[in-house]
Amino acid sequence: MPTAVEHGFLKLDGFGDRDEQHKLSEAFLKIDSAFLKLEGADTTSAFLKLEASPAIKYEFETIGGAFDKLGDVVGDTANVALKIDDFVIKLTNAGSVTLDAVTTGGGVDPQSDFLKVDAALTTSAADLKLFGEDFLKLDQSASVSDFWLKVDAVGSDLGTLGSDMTADENAFDQLGEDFIKLGGGAAAAASDPIIDTFYKELGADLYKIGSDFGSLSSDFLKLESVMTAGGGVTVGSAVELLSASSGGGMGPIGSSFAALDQDFLKLDNALGAAGGPAAAVIGDFIHKLFGGGGGGAA
Image (cartoon, rainbow, N blue to C red; front, side):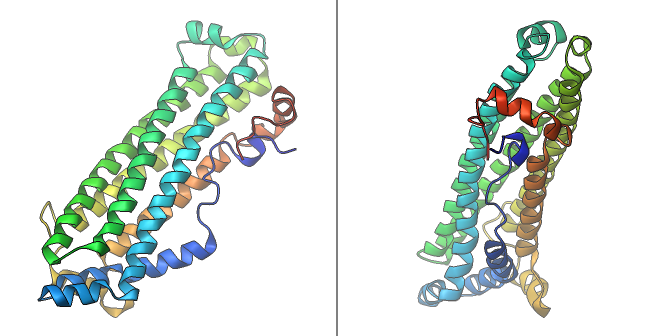
């Protein structure tokens, strides 16, 4: 039976489905044009007619729905982090030193830091869903002015997500530092070399996950800047959007979304790889600790 480690600890299960990726790519390609058309409506009736068009609705619904779903996936990932905490206790206490001894004598507190990861991911999950829901509301506006007020709200969501991703980065960095100390500190000399190697590799992988969250923070803040045009209630000038979207390429909004998409895929890969080759070596051991794989994350 598969163990938690064999399938990766925190992999964003189901994220990056090929069909969904194709739909998102198409929406990213056309979203700047949708903003431009809505911005250019000279009357409320013209705006409402454009807003009701199936093509424009599809783009907003595809992108908003994707982030709403992503919030659910990240929320599930936070729950898995708590299961890993239980795994760490069992694995460490199965050696010749207990986790309590490592915590008090080694200057690390992985249990506490796992809870911080869980809290950070839970916050990110809720804010991703809020962003997705607010983005969906853009296509439910009563007028052009109402539309841009909602864009401002979306911009605020993006700024919050930028801060959330930084908090995730810091939480994973701290957890990575804990594991590196667990694998190389004074307590490690009395422990199992295989477990120590696993801890070192996991610590390095957690640093990589933190770095990927740092990239996402930059992506969200860049998208905020593009969408709010420095804090105004418009998405840049129509001329800028038109020139950026002409020739069949993505405009600044679509390109920013595409960068987010790619960095979430990188994060997905990093989460799935956490533990490295040493995970396979101790897979049977973990399987026995969980009594038949009952603690699996996948």
